[in-house]
Amino acid sequence: MSSERVNTANGATYPVQTPFGADNTTQAMGVTAPQGEAPLVREALSSVVSRETLRSPGVPEVSFVAPQAEAGRRHKTDAGWPKPARCRVLTVANQKGGVGKTTTTVNLAASLAMNGLRVLVVDLDPQGNASTALSVEHRGDIPSVYQMLVEDMPLAEVVKEVPEMPGLYCAPATIDLAGAEIELVSLVARESRLKRALMAYDAMELDYILIDCPPSLGLLTVNALVAGDEVLIPIQCEYYALEGLGQLIRNVDLVRAHLNPNLEVTTILLTMYDARTRLASQVAGEVRSHFGDVVLRTVIPRSVRVSEAPSYGQSVMTYDPGSSGALAYKDAAREMAFRGAQKTTA
Ligand SMILES: Nc1ncnc2c1ncn2[C@@H]1O[C@H](COP(=O)(O)OP(=O)(O)OP(=O)(O)O)[C@@H](O)[C@H]1O
Ligand SMILES: [Mg+2]
Image (cartoon, rainbow, N blue to C red):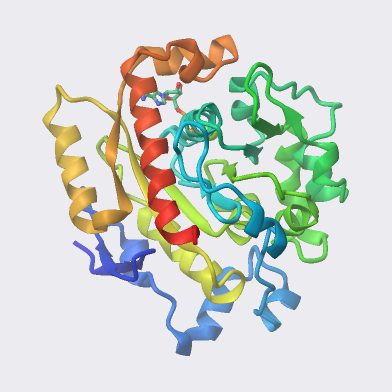
């Protein structure tokens, strides 16, 4: 068992353990990047972060809403859900594949939009699964996140409205993005290109930006961690669920130490919970005991309707709104919105 610790939004630190077998890499590294270990930290990040950035770690704070606009903002939607005082940017990350990152991004975004909030999904995964699930075209030749990151195309030229879902927008990913990890390496400020694009975007009317990450900790995920204020980690209630989590959290700490001082792990969501198995409740118990309040009370059940929805180009919220998966995602979105409101609204 390891004794790693993670900083969380409520200021507490929690140990991170790998209960299902030793994760030697993460155990050896220690999660929180201590001040005195800058050379070590720099070495660790140097594979993905450009030298200029490491020399001057101070990055300007992202502010998506002008003060005068904040003053005039309504605090609640018609459905009674709180509107954050400024746009919340959540990076949905877990380098483990198939844990529910995309499903979570799409369904939380749809729930928020259906309850009166204005939401942008940034599809940062070359697989383009979030774009597919939202029925947003992502053929090779359309303006996409690739052009935005690599060719400096303004985000406004990339963003599309999601069909039949007022208030929901998507910046689609095409397969070109697969090459971006390599192409970004030679570009200036390679790890903060998404942040720059978001800052230049007129996000005045947006309440949420959700960034769907690929299953890796490369430059695309680093861009998302630099651009966001909050990290949302979906954890699948399965064996090995926590392996590799220490590495993700260490990367979050490194990015916070050098590139984005505002970054916090604010939300963990348990996904694909199968109430029939003891393993699922064991995993859920482990995660809750290690991460405490950061874990949403709502758990997403394993549900066939959730997995069917993307093939109809829909979230489960519209595909089968009464299904257990849709109801759970709505509860999770509400919980997230109200929790964030305590922090971000006046
Ligand atoms: N609650 C659920 N019930 C049943 N199936 C689910 C559920 N959540 C996700 N799935 C299915 O599990 C698979 C993986 O989910 P998803 O694509 O969201 O994971 P991911 O973490 O984004 O994957 P990747 O790492 O490849 O990007 C998909 O086929 C999805 O439909
Ligand atoms: Mg995905």
